[in-house]
Amino acid sequence: MSDDALYVPLGEGDLRLEPIAEAHREGLRAACARDSEIWQIYPFTYEGEAFDPQFDSLLAGPPRRRAYAVLRGEEIVGMTAWIEQGQPGWSIEIGNSYIVPEVRGTGFNTRLKKLMLDHAFACGLERVGFKVDERNTRSQAAVLKLGARREGLLRHERKTWTGHVRDTVSFSILREEWIKR
Image (cartoon, rainbow, N blue to C red):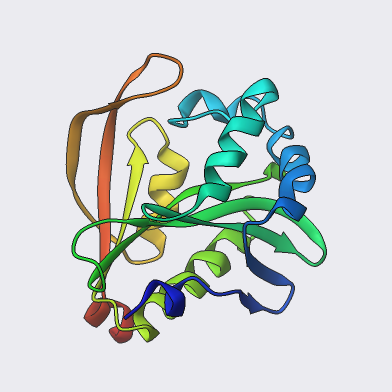
């Protein structure tokens, strides 16, 4: 499996994932500004003056992270990414995910993740991982709802932009588990 096969535009109904491009900058900036509190539990902030350097890192793309703008209809409502994890062509992580508060709890995020999981496994991957800040119970519940298994806690896995030393919960879904659902 090649990155070219994995990192393509995806869509289903009003949900679209477009590989991040300069044309998404202002729409994503506006989306990220809709929830200033969330950035306290993210490893990086996309708020205020931090937005442009972070967006530029998304544009830089490979080798480690391939980001998407998330659209509902014509409106940018967030971002997500494929992040290298494990053996290339075998395992990938879905991360760097954010959606605006208005679409949380509506099933939109579930549709988004299912679209990505279906595509990852159709491309031949065997494992999709998720890493979630231990404090982010809403995201942990969402990943479990997809059918992921909690693999464990990575203690002091990283230091966030706020200086918080983060414990990270690791989850995964295997191809055989996804197909059986």
